[in-house]
Length: 434
Image 1 (cartoon, rainbow, N blue to C red):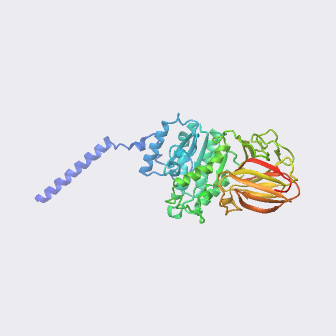
Image 2 (cartoon, helix red, strand yellow; image 1 turned 90 degrees about the horizontal axis):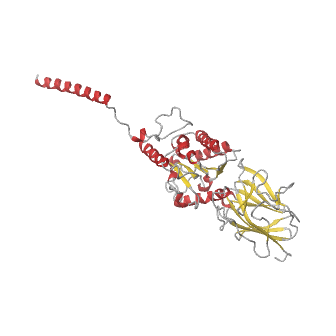
Image 3 (cartoon, rainbow, N blue to C red; image 1 turned 135 degrees about the horizontal axis):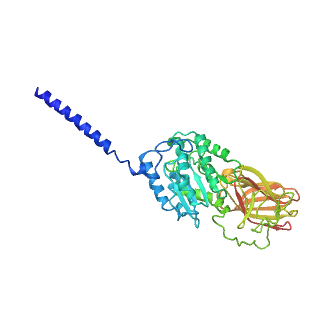
């Protein structure tokens, strides 16, 4: 009897205690954490959000999202006019000033670890557009793949991101980096990464404001995965890989006038005459016209800037165009020039008519075994024409021993796939004893 009474009293106590707790919860609901109530918080549902696909809602990510975005909100004025790097952990880990990789360029890092293409789209206005950027470099999509997003969803979100930037800033350069290689072990298999990159190229075809950079080929190994020596965890770049990425971007930033825009005071060596004055396209043209006094060809594929004659990337990604000297070269002669090619870029030098391939040789070929070639840096071509044959070298290494030539013709440069720059173009006519 006593035992039953004790049990009854205990049950009665629990009922009243539970009622008291419920009443207290009703009158004093739990306070949500600050990373949920912040104006920069990750949206708690997908309802009404732009784009499609995953948004990470794990606590660590929500805290990081609020922390970084709150900090950026305090820096809007100081970051005005910056070149914005936009993306996920790969961008974030480069550091606030991109490890000093772009001297004299004002930069703003807007990468958040764990972010997806839809997350970038959601935060684009506050984190990027408020800065009135001088340009935007975008790398995004690898986390989407790990979270199961189909490649087409990623490509569509990226297209929406770029379109929104273009509406606000129709004249700034937009640089889209291909999704970097990773591995199946990180839930980012090569086939899926390549499919995303194929869809990105197709979606942006014909858009003159966006330049696609071949960063997948830049970093992929023979089977399409990341290299351990550059991506120790097969996902995040190390210092060497970041340096390689920066070097790949430098030529484009120079073309857009964001860096390396000092005057070139070079003069040719004794006996040589310049074929390019470094200022405009005087002495060059298409077959039916010339561009004397002009800095651009009529459609903009060739540009003279700061001592460089630039064969620009086509909005259609790959499209051959040829620029010729307005004079002919019937005598034996030597031609020297320097060139710098973007990753996987392909162009050419025409000697009286026949073409010597000129581009990012180690990735694009055909001379893939060169030891002295410097990727995304300046390399010297020397062509010696004698008895209607051309002996061609790159940094002293043989390209062609005796390329057959017609008796006369102009010198030409090709714009095809990717950007190739030429400078210090000079020639020396000789008496055949060279």
